[in-house]
Image 1 (cartoon, rainbow, N blue to C red):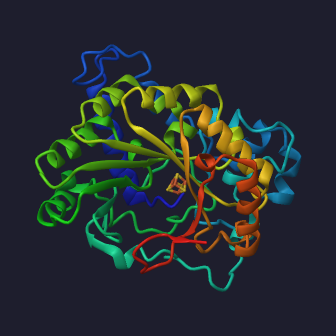
Image 2: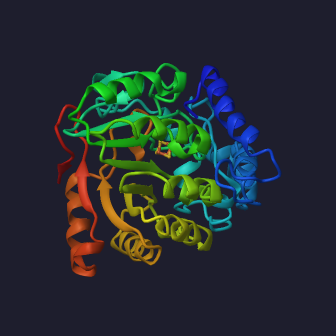
Image 3: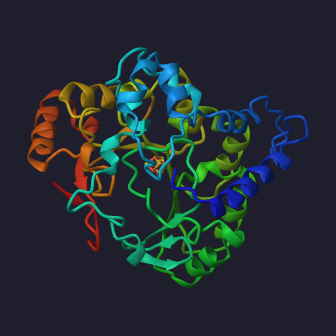
Amino acid sequence: MRLKLKDMGKIEAAIVTGNTLAAHAGQAPGSGIRDPQNQDWRRLWRDSVTDPRELLTLVGLENLAESILPRLDTGFALRVPRGFVARMRHGDARDPLLLQVLPQAAELDDVAGFGFDAVGDLDALTATGVLHKYNGRALLVAIGSCAVNCRYCFRRHFPYAEETAAANHWREAIEHLRTDDSVEEVILSGGDPLSLSTAKLAELTSALAAIPHIRRLRIHTRLPVVLPERIDAELIAWLRGLPWPVAVVLHANHSNELDASVTAACARLRATGAALLNQSVLLRGINDSVDALAALSKNLFECGVLPYYLHQLDRVAGTAHFAVDDAAARALVEALRVQLPGYLLPRLVREIAGESHKTPL
Ligand code: SF4
């Protein structure tokens, strides 16, 4: 994981805050709801698989450890919840979920054109943990932690130790948003913003509610997919109480990620009135086929989620082996257009540093 030791203190603090608040026999803070799941997501988080050999053993591939695990540290540790591991096909070294999380020797390749800040995040920082790239929207890098470490992560080299908006009670982020009345929409990103305790999220939204030019809230999260237990009664109560229209943008790349627990989490989110969208990354060997992408769109819709973006891979060091060239990506989307109704066709885009919007391909 790209977490450094300094980050760990902040994460522990955020998680402990939530634990302390929820310590009263499952009482959801501020909600008056007893929630037996309340402690579960933190326990499941702590119980994640972090040892590549254990992961290979769990999926019946222990014999491959010597041949496929990198011999050097990739600098980005394995982390994956056990519920996500359970959705992997046993004995299949090409499983599309396994390949998203298992460290690979190819990550150590130095490939021209793949760098440490592929989408210009550092130039877009306007306050601690605040990225301002696009008109009317500001993105908060809320926290550096995620429940899963995706090997293709576009922020795997981001300096989270210095740049997390939740630090210092969100003070700098809130001050920036208060003084820039061009910002109508606040986007919570990370890391994964739902890795923060609900109390910490509520601290932010209480302050945002006092800023009249904020009109919408968007949450970018992979937690409903990889750790659906996070969508607990406390989080739902917080979402229901927000004063703005809310969009929750999930991140799933393959239909096998969407099991019954994810469907149930999406149903809980939809019941709050939030719009549910999904963005995927086009990944070689994982979802670069018409069948895989069509199944993903159809299954997302069955979960009440509309496909939004299909991203071309951000050219981040250590991820080149996932890249699909633009011509092949366009051909895939043209073939998908024949297969799917228009509302299930994601927009193929690339993020180009310095551009004022995502670039359609
Ligand atoms: S969930 Fe998103 S931010 Fe976290 S590791 Fe995966 S791609 Fe990166």
